[in-house]
Length: 276
Image 1 (cartoon, helix red, strand yellow):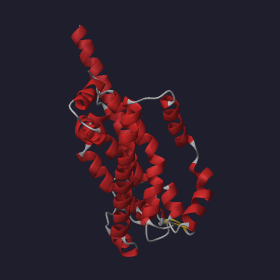
Image 2: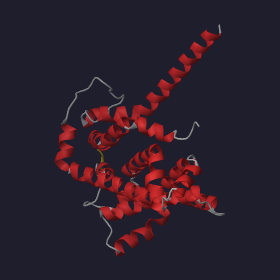
Image 3: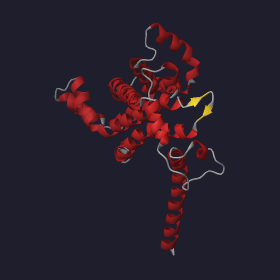
Image 4: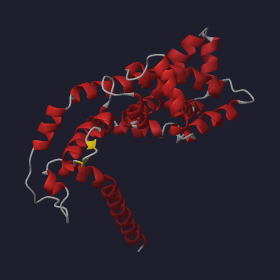
């Protein structure tokens, strides 16, 4: 009897999980399907899900109208650049907070996290003026700087959490063997925290890739990433849903593929230190 109840419970939980997964995935599926429709079929009511005239016209027109590979390269440079610089700053910062904490360490961590609650539009004007004065508008360098700064609190918090799970005695033993600060971080701490660092890296790349507010307000053409590529299909004449869906599919495909192939590493990093 108990086995039957357990089996039934597993089936119910599995069914609920599949329903939730489908609800989460449905907007992506609908966007992909819409990208293969004509503009008329894209706005038809009720919508056609499978039985419609499949066409590649939207993808052909999007590629003819916009330089997809320029936007793609901008996204790669901006997301990877901001992530690498962020990790270079966050690893020493998280090390100091985890292994050499001060009286105000927790307050500093909370203050950093509180900056993520600030509405970006509240600081748009001063940052825009700073970027204009220093020639950083519509440049990859400018976007790398701003994305590094806005994601740095999350990177430090995640690394701090992972580092706290590493026994401090290991680092003390390394010091007793003559390891300096640089060797301690590079050759002892970093290899032990590879899962956590990898998951932080992947998550930050995803956040930077999907950032839209700053990329739309601080770029025009030269450094515009894929978020600006999507937004270009919204015009005063209205939304071209089929072409917008095609542009969205092309923009999200690389990061979805990256997430799919790195999901094991991401989950491993997010659960790093959960079980001792």
